[in-house]
Structures are given as C-alpha cells and as structure tokens.
Image (cartoon, rainbow, N blue to C red; front, side, top):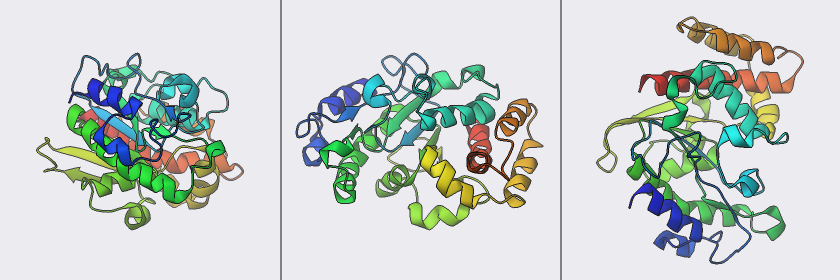
Length: 281
C-alpha cells in the first residue's frame, strides 16, 4: 500500500491491525485523528520519499483533535499548544537555521509527521488508562511500520516513551526507552539502521516530547548548567551559521531562574544533533 491508502484506511479503522485496537473509530466514535500536513510538509498524496519523519504519541485531547493535522506550524498558532510551539522553536533553531522560518532550506517540504498511536481517546471517555493505551499502541505499531516502509525516510525522530517503544517493538532500534535514557545527557540517542525490512540505511534519533509538562518538570531537572551548556557550545562551534541557535538561547536566556529555559536548552542539545542529520541526508 502507498501512504495515501494507509492513512485513508487507518483514519476509518479499516486496517487489519485496527481490529484489536481499543481506540479504533470502529469501537469509539469520539477519538481524534490527525495526519501529516501536505501544505507545509511532504505532499504524501504525490511524493513517495520523505527525508525526515517525526513520531510523537497520539492526538487525543490535543490541537490536532480540532485541526486534524499534526503540523507544528499550524498547531503552534493555538496559544495553548506549547508542544507545537516548542517543537517549532527547536526546528527553527537547529534544522532550518532561520529564526521564525521553518521552511528555510527546503527541509520542511520533505518532512512527515505521525503518531505512535494514530487515534487518540479523550480523557473524558475513561479510555486513557495505561493498559488501554498500551494495547492501542501495540496495534498501531504495525501501522507505523507500514508508514515507514512506504515513505523510506532518511531520518526518523521518535519523541517520547511511546514513540520510542513502538520503534523498539517493530525491531527498528535495539534499545527501548528505559535502556537508553542514561544516554540523553550528552545529546539525542541515535542508531544507524542498516537492514530493516529491505529498506535503505536510515538513522533514528530518540529524544523527549516537547510538551510543557516534560520541558518544565522532567527536563528542567536534567539540565546541568555546566555540562549541558558545554555540549551546546561545542556543537554550535561546528556550525557555519549559528545565528538561529543564538536567537534561541536569547529567547530561553534565564536557565538559573526559569524552568522552561532549562528544559528547552536541554532539548536544544539534542536537536542540534538531529538538525545536522536532517540537513545532511
């Protein structure tokens, strides 16, 4: 199947894997669904090869529930969507290398957004218990595999526990979330994948989600004023155009006072690695 057919069937819950999914629209009508934006990202209706792919968790109780797109550019317009806004700030700083210009360099037009779980149940349904979510993700891991096989991305970025564990369960990466977390202090965890289902070699990066909760609570505690800043400085020195990184650092300029600044600077250390790979692929 090509990617257009995969998404069409997945949206309606009509893939064989959807039969076991508790979040399938066949069983729960109120689930949210979003797909990759063809206006900002790769036009998957026509093109069959992506340069980069981002995998997050699910669209339940998030902006895509209303916009029906996973595009950070569109969803960042929602004032309350810190996940999209912060992802866009990081993309501008470390991928496009142009402040407020995610399309710079043309990398966004070769980019594809997806979720580890294609649909998302609302908390109001009572279907977001860990065991139910795990069952939904296990069903959708097969759909994720189909998307990767169809688009053959050069770089995959898994953001957060669910996305990483899905890649692990379909045998793309060798470590699950719990086994890779201690690598995150120096940068994004990465693996070169050389022989997965006959695809050409590609690279996988694993990092954290960009939600406000993760940035302000989890990552602010992992930030180290000496080590994190040293990693960033070393990596920035290797860039020919560091202006966008400097703009980012001036936006999040008070790590000694502000949790968000600490968390975003910790993530920047990961995204410089990711940006280098996307631009070089």
